Length: 87
Image (cartoon, rainbow, N blue to C red; front, side):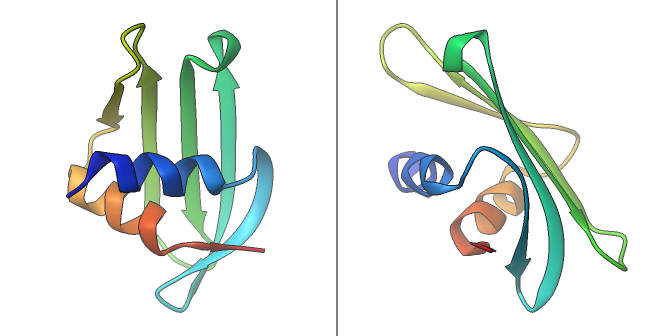
Protein backbone atom coordinates (compact mmCIF):
# COMPACT_ATOMS: atom_id res chain seq x y z
CA UNK A 1 0.00 0.00 0.00
CA UNK A 2 1.17 3.47 -0.81
CA UNK A 3 0.45 5.79 2.11
CA UNK A 4 0.78 8.73 -0.30
CA UNK A 5 -2.08 7.37 -2.45
CA UNK A 6 -4.19 6.85 0.68
CA UNK A 7 -3.53 10.39 1.95
CA UNK A 8 -4.34 11.87 -1.47
CA UNK A 9 -7.65 9.97 -1.61
CA UNK A 10 -8.46 10.95 1.99
CA UNK A 11 -7.69 14.62 1.31
CA UNK A 12 -10.01 14.54 -1.71
CA UNK A 13 -12.97 13.53 0.48
CA UNK A 14 -15.08 16.48 1.65
CA UNK A 15 -15.20 17.61 5.28
CA UNK A 16 -18.39 17.31 7.29
CA UNK A 17 -21.18 14.80 6.90
CA UNK A 18 -22.34 13.31 3.59
CA UNK A 19 -23.31 10.07 1.88
CA UNK A 20 -21.16 7.78 -0.18
CA UNK A 21 -21.05 4.41 -1.90
CA UNK A 22 -18.48 1.66 -1.39
CA UNK A 23 -18.69 -1.76 -3.07
CA UNK A 24 -22.36 -1.15 -3.92
CA UNK A 25 -23.34 -0.28 -0.34
CA UNK A 26 -24.43 3.12 0.97
CA UNK A 27 -22.65 4.81 3.89
CA UNK A 28 -23.11 7.88 6.05
CA UNK A 29 -19.65 9.45 6.29
CA UNK A 30 -18.32 12.09 8.67
CA UNK A 31 -14.88 13.65 8.21
CA UNK A 32 -13.75 15.90 11.05
CA UNK A 33 -10.65 18.09 11.38
CA UNK A 34 -9.18 18.73 14.81
CA UNK A 35 -6.12 20.54 16.13
CA UNK A 36 -6.07 22.94 13.15
CA UNK A 37 -5.98 20.03 10.70
CA UNK A 38 -3.08 18.15 12.27
CA UNK A 39 -5.50 15.47 13.43
CA UNK A 40 -8.36 14.19 11.29
CA UNK A 41 -11.04 11.57 11.89
CA UNK A 42 -13.26 9.69 9.49
CA UNK A 43 -16.24 7.57 10.49
CA UNK A 44 -18.49 5.73 8.06
CA UNK A 45 -21.58 3.74 8.96
CA UNK A 46 -23.24 1.44 6.46
CA UNK A 47 -26.90 2.37 5.98
CA UNK A 48 -29.12 -0.67 6.45
CA UNK A 49 -26.13 -2.84 7.37
CA UNK A 50 -23.59 -3.46 10.07
CA UNK A 51 -20.31 -2.30 8.51
CA UNK A 52 -18.43 0.50 10.25
CA UNK A 53 -15.19 2.30 9.42
CA UNK A 54 -13.33 4.53 11.87
CA UNK A 55 -9.81 5.92 11.96
CA UNK A 56 -7.65 8.89 12.86
CA UNK A 57 -4.99 10.41 10.63
CA UNK A 58 -2.27 12.45 12.27
CA UNK A 59 -0.12 14.95 10.36
CA UNK A 60 3.30 14.96 12.00
CA UNK A 61 5.54 18.03 12.14
CA UNK A 62 8.00 16.44 9.68
CA UNK A 63 5.24 16.26 7.04
CA UNK A 64 4.52 12.55 7.31
CA UNK A 65 1.09 11.10 8.02
CA UNK A 66 0.34 8.48 10.67
CA UNK A 67 -2.76 6.32 10.14
CA UNK A 68 -4.42 4.87 13.26
CA UNK A 69 -7.45 2.64 12.54
CA UNK A 70 -9.90 2.24 15.43
CA UNK A 71 -10.07 -1.47 16.30
CA UNK A 72 -10.02 -2.72 12.72
CA UNK A 73 -7.39 -3.80 10.19
CA UNK A 74 -5.53 -1.04 8.37
CA UNK A 75 -6.25 -2.77 5.05
CA UNK A 76 -10.01 -2.32 5.60
CA UNK A 77 -9.59 1.42 6.18
CA UNK A 78 -7.31 1.85 3.17
CA UNK A 79 -9.63 -0.10 0.85
CA UNK A 80 -12.58 2.03 1.96
CA UNK A 81 -10.85 5.38 1.42
CA UNK A 82 -9.43 4.33 -1.94
CA UNK A 83 -12.76 2.94 -3.14
CA UNK A 84 -15.51 5.12 -1.67
CA UNK A 85 -17.37 7.50 -3.97
CA UNK A 86 -18.75 10.51 -2.09
CA UNK A 87 -22.08 12.02 -3.16
